Image 1 (cartoon, rainbow, N blue to C red):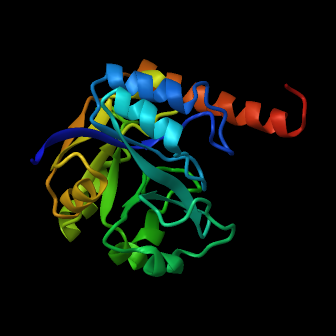
Image 2 (spheres, rainbow, N blue to C red):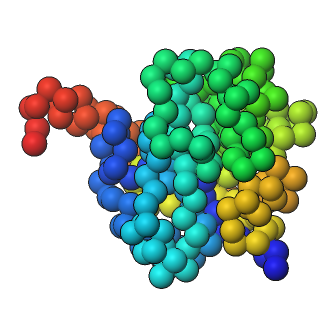
Length: 233
């Protein structure tokens, strides 16, 4: 039977090949169970972090684990839930979304108007028909809110607005998420989002919390760069 499921579609773990994340997929699932999530998607960059051990562990914690990926197309980020592929090829154009989009996956525009090079920004408009939903990111407060254009676009073009944590640190989990009216299985959740059976649940950050996220993100990038240069173990 359909119920309101607590879901986060955008989370990273230490298995991410391009980010330094201080917790692994099992630790994330344990934390998600403490936050009483019904379903989560691990969306590492250009790879699917999903296997039998993770699925089994999640089930024991009462969580449905969804396959997911934050993929790069035309050097822009795109969230894909339940993709048909395990790795995303390099230099893939946004036009390829027309071949990927189907009834069994969910394509979301993540942080579309945030001031980063990977955000879609104006690139979203010509490809809007390929996106099922638009993300409302956790990273905002009453003064700074880059989600405003995303909300306007979702309302203007009748696209569902999906709350996510874009979690890089475990304390971020649960700050913003979605309540979805669906059965607790992947295709039901995907269909419910596409039909707009979704609620945004969010709590704005304090300036201190926003600064904490920004500093952690900067340090993560620095650590990853040093790791590639073999200057840290």
